[in-house]
Structures are given as C-alpha cells and as structure tokens.
Image (cartoon, rainbow, N blue to C red; front, side, top):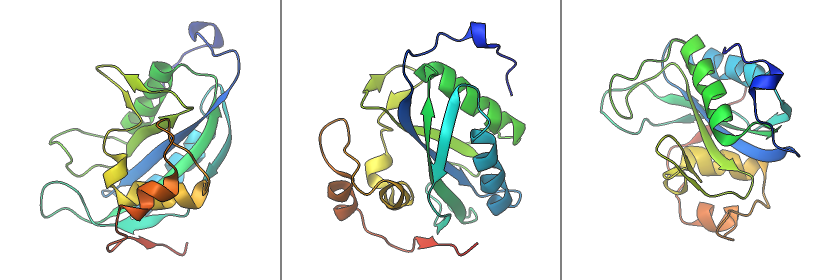
Length: 174
C-alpha cells in the first residue's frame, strides 16, 4: 500500500459514504475478495466497512475467462476521490493485478461505484461508475447492502435492479 501520512492527504471535513465494487477471477478469487474486504477496512481515513455477500458471476469481456467472485463494500471515508482511487489501485497492485486486456481476467478489481451523492467526470475516475447500471454483479449486491439507496440522479437502486436481469448470478454460502 502507499506510504501516505495523514498530512499528505487533503481530507474532507466530514466523512461520506461510498460504495466499492470488488471482483476477482484469478489465483483463488474467493480468497482474493475476502482478503481485499479485510484490507479495505484498514485503509487510512476510512471506517465502518460493511459488505454484501459474495457472489459468483459470469465473466464480462473476452471469452474463455473463469467465473468471477464479486461483492460490494460500503465504507465511510474522508479521502478525496482520487486519493481513495490511489489507495484502491495500491491494493490491486498488492494483489498482483495486471492490466493485459480490457475487461480481461484479474486477480483483483476495485471500483468506486458511488462517492456520496457526487457525480465525478475526470480522466481517471467517473462516478457513478459508468457501467454499474448494466451489471447484475454490482446492482444485486448493492441492493442487498443498501436496499433504499438513491443514486445521484434520484433513481433508486430498485429502479436499476428492475431493469437488470439476475441471469446466472448466484450468492455464495461461505
């Protein structure tokens, strides 16, 4: 993880709630996601971690990939959006994430899905995550975690889930 000290972060005055999507389909994906959930709880200036159950999902992207293990985590953070993104990418690197092909297999993928009620459009970060409304492996765990969630555009999580089929997504009993 990065070696930032408290003084190197420009912190938010008040913590805000954000949601992180987790996924893995390489090198014991179940263990990768479980370990990443523990590591998210230890991020600087973040607290109150809660998470959905773990789910098995079909891969999105190139054919021939193994199935994914997915979850969604909720945490409160005082980190600015790009500082949080840097911390998440540092965790991905600890898990030996390599980016060989778009939507290809990975040891760990961590995405900021929602960051409070903010809408962010930067070269490195778009929030709400631009593909989350199409992804059952994001929406169903997110609804499990936060059934009354409202998106920045005012639509509810239920509105989004109703437009996205469950397909072969299945919760795991672990």
